[in-house]
Length: 216
Image (cartoon, rainbow, N blue to C red):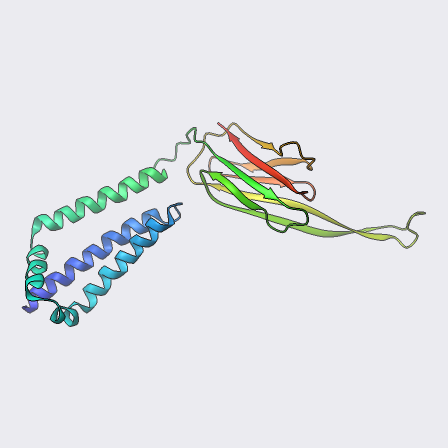
């Protein structure tokens, strides 16, 4: 195999690595983690082949080398790789709603299971949620002496803040909460947009199932 063939194949593998990397970067942050990881993995493999092809090709049968060299010199193969790569990037971007910031009526909800004295609730179900985080704040209140407590006392108080980021922008009208009959403290949506909502819970949560639903 000539030096020009080796260089042509290296360039072809390098272009393939960039194509798969572009797809992976476009899909980064999406819910389909295995697809994203596979794209990054293939990109890494193509990059390694491009870098180490001069050392690798000697271990590959001559017929396969000739076939790879022929394909890497074929303009239609380059064009096909470009078309397929760009089509995949645009398709993933469209599915993720990238480049289309207009909020839409999309089913968006989060179901959390709280347990008594829990630090983190468990997510049981979610729709159109990219990321969420529940923060429990604990603080001490010092009460002044009273007839019942002559020395005064300390009371631990707790509140919760739930941060939710949507996968795609939502044409939101309001956020509603359903604790399925459990006695829970006041729950409010303190801040919201087509991309996120911040929820405040005024006291500690008992063991309860909490549904957070975005009404569109």
